[in-house]
Every structure is written in structure tokens, then in C-alpha cells.
Length: 318
Image (spheres, one colour):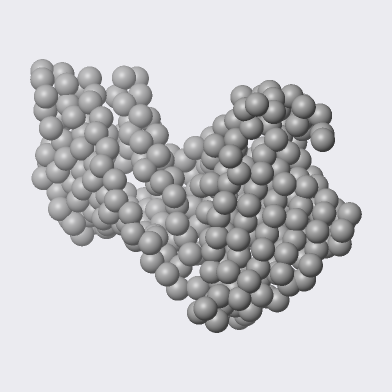
């Protein structure tokens, strides 16, 4: 039992259990865990990168991964292999390190089983069992683990396809509705959405992201493009076409999103501006998206849009 286990045994979370079927033999999926070169390509959620990794696939061998966040913060996970039975099973005793203090935040026993699937591919099952310390940050990280794992397995699916010389083709659909009420007139809200100078004050990426190209031609048939780069080096590109504009009432557009050169989604967005008082305006946002070829954002697009709408509100108050 580690020191982390001794801190709060009565409140340890339930294990996370995930599975994924890969269109590849067990040997290939197992191999994707076997070297730093492979791990650097897939062992992180969307927006993160893996600049450093050490993988020694043998019992007692090291498994160390540095995940760099979009803000440029390095998150280290260090551990050792406790079981290696190719190509059927592996287990890794992992310890997530506090990026501020360097000490352990929590430990995670990660068990991975590989079996033949009826489709002719490989069923990979992951069970991750946690032992938390007392840090609130550890609780939040574990709560986000299922979503992070889903995004990571999407990357693994792409890596397995790359190893076989192909690309995984898939489409995942999503939709959301968001409303905001602003202390502003409909004209002011419309201006923030339609004028490049006003929109540039709020339509930006998160911390650690910087714009490298911005073009806005606001008219029916016009295009808008915003490209930026995270400190990790990952670029994002928003390419939109306006299809319907009713001043101070409605804007409809479609847009593509890319991470580096990879197209990850195509979406339809509808913005409705509704006066609700002398200086109160509601903005209703509806979006339907098609997430492409292994990319499933697991709700990140809705959260990101909500953050942008909050920034819009702050720009109206400035």
C-alpha cells in the first residue's frame, strides 16, 4: 500500500471502465503501447501533446509520459509495468505528479486486456483503479478521466490505423443549445457578432493560444477564418461561410474546424438575437456538428462555445 492509499481509503472513487473495438489484430493494438514513439502520438486527450515519454515494456520497466496542456503546463505521469503478457494483457502502476509541487497527486492502476472480437478486430478493455490523496485537484482530474480516456482512445484508433497504413473513417453527431442574456441592446449584440474589430475582442482561444490569421467578410456567401496556435505548437483553424443574415435578428453559418492539417468537424450554427427589455437582449445559439474520423469531442465544443459567449458578455460590459 502506498502513502496515497493510506490518506483517504474511505472515499476512493469507483474504477473507470472503458472498451473499444479496433479494426486491427491484437498484435498491432498491443504494439501501440510498446514504445515512446507510439505513445507520443496518442496517449493524451484533445488539445494536449506528449513532448516526452519513456516506455520499457517489461515487468518493472518504466512507463513515463509528459502531457503538455494547451496552456503549456507539463503534467507528468510516472509508473512501471507490473504485468506484460503479449498480446493479451498489460498492467501499469501509475502515479500522477502535481505540476506545481512535484509530489504525487494520486495513483492509478491501469489494467488493459486485449481479446479477439467477433468482427475480426480487437476488443481492448481498460480498467483504471484510483487511490487519491487529499488534493482537490486530484478529485477534479479523476472526475474528468472518462472523458479524457474517450478522447485518448480516439487518438489510439487513429494511431492503430496509421500503423496499418490507413485512416479510420467515422462520423459522430452532436447538438447543443445555449442561451445568454446580456445587459445590452440588440444592436450592440449584433455589432459584437458582425463587425471584425468588435468580434476580435472576444472570439479568441483559451489561455496559451495566440491568433496567427484572422479574416472576416460578413455577408451572405462571405467567409470568416480564424487560425491560431497553442504554446504546444498545435494549430486550430475555424473556417466559416455565412448563409443567412437578418440584421439584429438572426445569423446562420456553417464552419469547419481543423487541428493542424486534420479536419475534425463540420457544423451548422444558428444565432438568434431576441430583445427582452430596454437594455436586455437574449442570444440563442443552436449548433449541430459532425465529428469526423475518430474525433469525438465529448462535449468540449459546447463548453468552449459557452466560454466564448461569456467572453462576448465581458466585451459588451467593457
